[in-house]
Image (cartoon, rainbow over all chains, first blue to last red; front, side, top):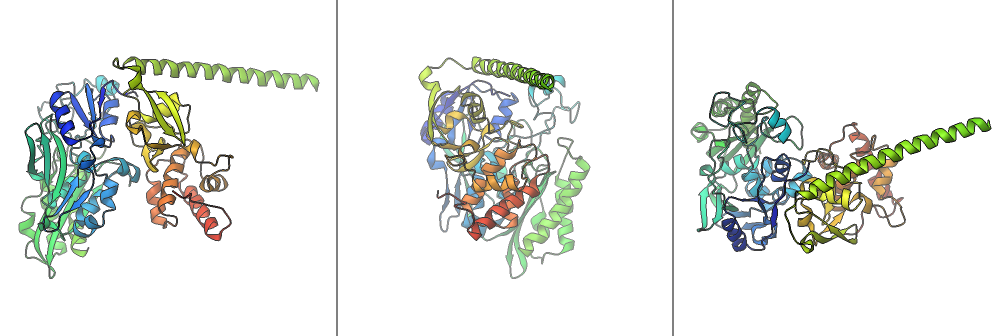
Length: 327
Length: 213
């Protein structure tokens, strides 16, 4: 399959990148690792007039430890670099656990954190070749006006399939975004839109530049559990991240988040209330599993049935709580 | 007997003719695809399309459209057909090459973005005199490939693994191999080949397993 034609923009600084995105407002797509955008462009899901290769902007690469003020990860930092970072592994283990499950080792050499955070939503009816989609009359998300997953509805159920965002949500991460008006920062929990088409609170001319992990979440124990068909390369079909702040055997603070089950990754509401002050046990872990399963709204957007994915998120949430407590 | 020989020869000639004809047809297919592929390109100056790539230690001048992937350029512009196009969407690893010594799926890399970087393909793995890389040799000895389509990709991933970790654990080897798909179920033989190459290196019976970076 060949890529549709486009002009390639290769800025060297962030200012230059922001100016180019403003100049080609809405007509440019950003590429970093290329592992999400390029296959989609081959399937003609995107046919932008301009592709902006962000990798020349060196200032957006790397992990910066700011003692007393958390850790800042540049959007261009590869997932391999995060996986091998001693500080991430030691202070933010839930992110380490999630990163090392993304795709395959080679894809992690290519893929970036910014790309994983901004990953396009996925669906059986969407991630297909132009010929395939055309033969089915297209779909709501691209080129069509009906949803094959929930016929009659006007809502796109394409599933957010990033592995790192649930871990980042558990850590209370913030994203830094550059646009024509300068830099802005937003909590990751307010960055996503639960709509397979809208996806993100991100204007077409804006660029995600950094992810900030707060000092307050340093040292939280964590676990990430992922359901997929094969043990490598695959996107998650359900994912649960659990982060626990422990003090002498009891949970002092906690967050639980799920991914690959809804059009956006979500923090599981009231999970903290169930966990805080408790010594983690099978019984409490079971309750967290129930809450996570209730937050999940899987539909037939992937190769596994929604029933199975909902059941597995319950099992995986339980396992994640027990493992985070044991780690 | 002489009759039989001449029959055999003519049959061989016939088969060779068929193969040559088939090759011509498939080459035409590539040319045709390449021309439509290039035909989509916006009008840009020849200077912008003509770029220099560092491939296997050689500087190669090549005409590359903006939307060309590295896998495409290597195979159809540079004649380096070792990297295979399997899925062509970043899921199988058959197109794996090293960029600055790190493996990438070349089907998901734009050629224009690897200017001034070092590209190594399977064709650049053996020594100049044709001596195979120790792991290549071990793969041959241990029957590490069956149909062979995925093998070049695997070799690049394995080369990277051993360059960074000369004595990997079983889990580390299996984890590295998980980047590539083999549909002939050759993973165990590949694992044994890597193990054999490492053991040979440690016993000092083979020279330089891992080249100095």
